[in-house]
Image 1: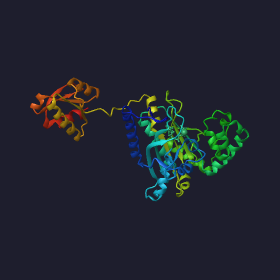
Image 2: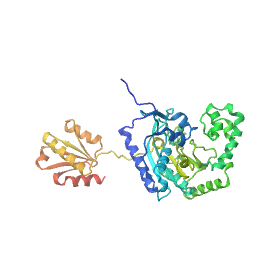
Image 3: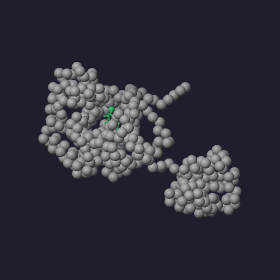
Image 4: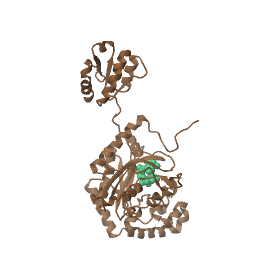
Length: 425
Ligand code: ATP
Ligand code: MG
């Protein structure tokens, strides 16, 4: 039998998990600073949540979902994104009644999409996302964008580009939609079959087509910006004003259309402009979704959010050659010479751990020299050696591996001495 991992998935090996932990912790910390709280929803949901919440003209719903029938004949789907689940939970738990509004939430976990595998595109990937539900203050649009940017900046990324657009309110979108249909209809046979379907169902999504992106009609398509009514234009102006005030650089791209159906007003994407990042340049995308809560059975609460995958963040960090701190190194390695010493080493190893000192020892009955080599390889800060001599003196030899100095330390003061040595590093 030759079983390999499924296409589009990856094993994250111990040599890489430390990087993941570093960025995950950084994200959680930023969320605490901005006062967003974590929500954890199930990995699978009723399929209908996504057909309604993401929209049945989207690539996600049409081509990318892992949908299955369970033993009770329910149609379930592995979540392809997080917003629909968060909004479902917001409605189900009546969070609109919480005294503190808007409700500010974040999530981090695996998402599943049946996609063609390429660098930065997986079938299982980890998305971090956040949602602020219950406010239509343009200042919160700026807050959401700022949180996203702050994460990338704290991760050390420099080659970033923020692109924003406004999709306007329903009235503006209807006017723009009509203009789009008029623009594309006479030439629709030049477009892919997906676009032909989109023409009547959701012509805005033609602008987001990956197959027809070079068709000259894309360039000349009526721009959303020209169809914003006064209110929508004023809203967009305020968002831009806040971003400027917060010193967040941005570009306006009137053709930026997010893939999901439920967006209105603010839409944005963050790209990496780093050389070597690869063909996919988008790190994160998000926007406002004022109709979604009502669509999923709740009151008319406005919302905004965004999502990014950890995989693409790590790729961008790699492209910018950002170094990660080593969080896996060991405080102490204990070396035993002889059987009696081995007993003491075992006892002390477990004792050190109780005092929050990371400690490891030999389990292969290797010679002293090989044990010392392990200590080096594991980059331990210190080595403790116990042989017959040390046992007799009720002491250990404690060696600082960075300086090479060593001292005899009695068992009774060992914890203190080790702490002194490792905490100084
Ligand atoms: P793309 O145009 O790259 O397919 P999308 O519009 O499908 O992106 P969203 O649904 O908005 O992306 O998801 C938000 C973010 O989630 C993306 O910006 C990206 O960081 C990440 N993401 C989406 N799909 C994948 C995937 N298959 N593998 C890794 N990350 C992904
Ligand atoms: Mg996609």
